[in-house]
Amino acid sequence: SKLMEGIMAKRGNSIIKGIEISDIITILNRAYADEWLAYYQYFIEAKVVKGIMKDAAIVELTQHAADELRHATMVADRIIQLGGTPLTHPKSWFDNTNCGYDEPKDFDVVSILNDAIKGEQCAISTYSKIVEMTKDKDIVTYDIVSSILAAEVEHEADLQALHDDIFDFIADLKKSMSL
Image 1 (cartoon, rainbow, N blue to C red):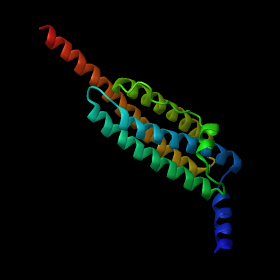
Image 2 (tube, rainbow, N blue to C red; image 1 turned 45 degrees about the vertical axis):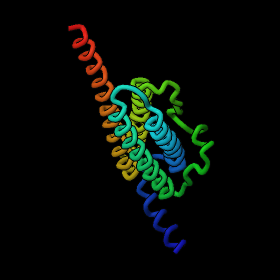
Image 3 (cartoon, rainbow, N blue to C red; image 1 turned 135 degrees about the horizontal axis):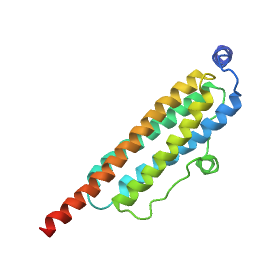
């Protein structure tokens, strides 16, 4: 029943110490906006990417898009648990984003990967701040954002590895052509 939900939410929120629930909801909504914009950026990049090793990039970008959508779901669920409402209109994503949106203009795989790496670095910075803010204060939010942070660190490493593989491949190609 609605009454029981209200009682449960109050009990769950009573474990939050030294931090305003409204402040947590605000920062989570900003992260929520970032996740949706990151999802779309990866989604569209996977569609338009061109050039050397693009198939590997498409696999990576498509996987990351799915992960960002999963993160958006986790963040939205936590906002609702806290008694808040996730941002309900895509226009509000742009008003609330920490990381913005890098529209792919050059569809070359290296440019796409550079944009994606920059986005992951911003996400890492954002989630690091939320982890710091909620540590020892809101254990549930802390656990959720810690797991998202770990995934974003992994994304950055995967993208960087693919980026480096492309440069190694090109260097090897140039070397073999000059022989």
